[in-house]
Length: 454
Image 1 (tube, one colour):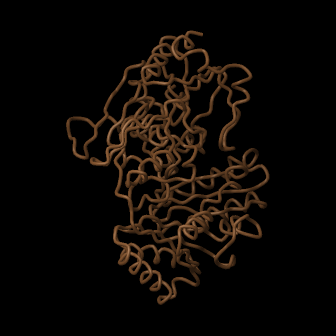
Image 2 (tube, helix red, strand yellow; image 1 turned 180 degrees about the horizontal axis):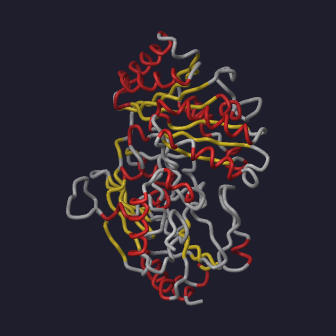
Image 3 (cartoon, one colour; image 1 turned 45 degrees about the vertical axis):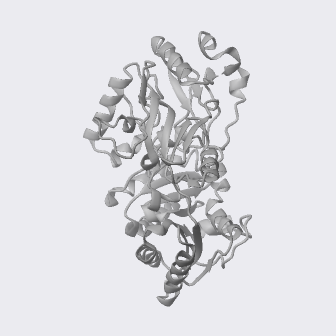
């Protein structure tokens, strides 16, 4: 295999080593690739892609493999290209507040490195210990702090990517303001590796917060949760960085007696909300947060609640929202976007439709209400096999009256491709196909994902 001459024989897995490959998250089928290749530099990535393009060899980029939409699924004809060994933090500029990394650096490593310099890596997701930044950028990851810091796209100043034919596009911008022609990095952010393989990134870092407040509130209705959200925005302003909603069906799965965690509140409430703020003025931020949360009780918007008083208590509250092992291992999982005010009605509609066709279904709603993103998870016999299409149809087609988006932060991959027309016009999809054909005429980069070019 000529690829071994490029990356070295020890960096190519074949045969049983491929078939025995283990994914960190139990959300993927077995790895079916003909080989897994581990380049150690951008030059090696470029050389591999030149060779593969010459032989019209399909390549599927591998990151941390924590995705939920079959974006890294392989066939026996594919080569899986893992960036795991390109894992260096090349520069952390504490004056300019930038970090330059290779694509295989995990989010946790970036967060820890920024923290050591008194800075803050602003994007955070539950898979932080496994997910790799190249994949996070390629899928435009979101997470729990989007209200304040935006999606991954908002933290990327520049990047480097390798095209299907091995051409290196180096757009390693380090400036907040740079209007020098087309901003080509956006061709690769959120496009799931179908236009190029991201190899290096320049991130914009934030100032490390000095105050950190988290509250868990229980509410009697979704309408009250929306009012809590809007009052939190008004009273906390720019310090508000996270707002999560959990239906009781999710909460009860996470805490005892059904789940493993202790609950600071009764498990019998219909809905729960997590409110999080971060700021730079400890005394005033703490006071403002407590006043804001007290106001929720004064208006009868909160039936019960707790404010964390320590790091451990903050983690304990967030652990409830992060308790997704049962979802990852067993459930069908969906992420959609629509107006916050419509989310309650949408979840109710979807739940009724699913249970009507799949009577044993357990439907749980939760997510980042502050940025219009809700997750639906469904447990049922056959939810991933015989009932999968029925469940998907209800989740996605129920978005149509709300002009909703079929993907908020997970991407399209293979799983959502049949439903892309719900959220994108024929003209938009046509332009996507034109870009793919222009940049990858042999259709070797992550073929079949997001769009079809045949």
